[in-house]
Length: 113
View 1 (cartoon, rainbow, N blue to C red):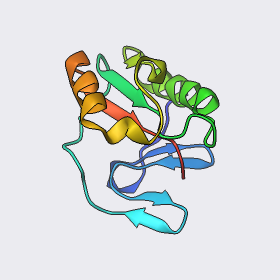
View 2: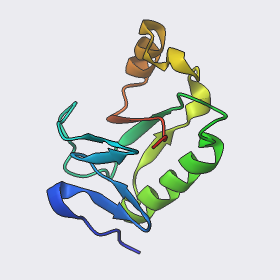
View 3: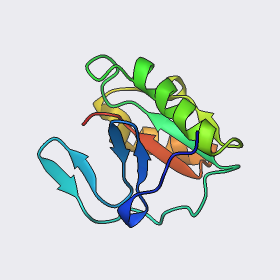
View 4: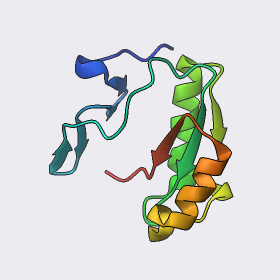
C-alpha cells in the first residue's frame, strides 16, 4: 500500500495525518517548519525519541509508524527509541549529543497528539 500525499506534502495515514507543515495536535496546530524537509525517506536513518514512555504508549505506536513508513520507503532504517533516554529529558543537551553522534537524517520526537 502506498500512502497518499495530501495538501502541503503531508503523508496521509488511514485515520491519521502525519503532516510536515500542519500537524494537528488536539486543539493546537503547527504551521511552520522547524527544519528542512527531506525529499525522500528511502535509504535515510530515522532516530526515534519517546517523551513519555508510558502515557502515549510508544512501544505500540512507534512500531506502527515504522511499519507504515517501511511500506512507502522500503530502504528506510530506524534507530529505536530504546537506544536513547526517554521522558522529558529528550530535549537535554546530553540526549541531543547522543542523537547527533548517531548521525540520523531525521528524528521522530514523541507520538502524542
